[in-house]
Length: 103
Image (cartoon, rainbow, N blue to C red):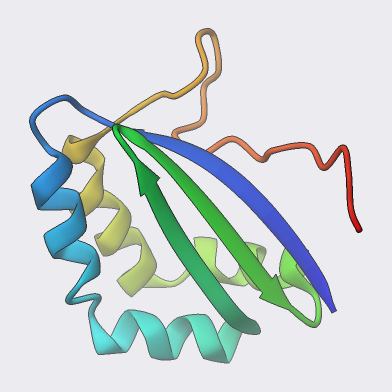
């Protein structure tokens, strides 16, 4: 089992839209995620910040597969207006976090 964590940031005033979208994630996106190898994904929100946890047998391979899935690309386009880069100078909307402790 492997896992990854990512940080994101919601644009001011778009918090409710982000939560609403994630209360109704498209079933075809969830299916594509499962087919790619994602076994578990959780999104947590604190203020404007998002923490995303992804788990699966091989998360790196699953995420690479998802990059080429049309439904995933449509979801990214749908979500993009709600998001901003969480780390100054970073080109990614969801940069990977570095694990520094594990119990």
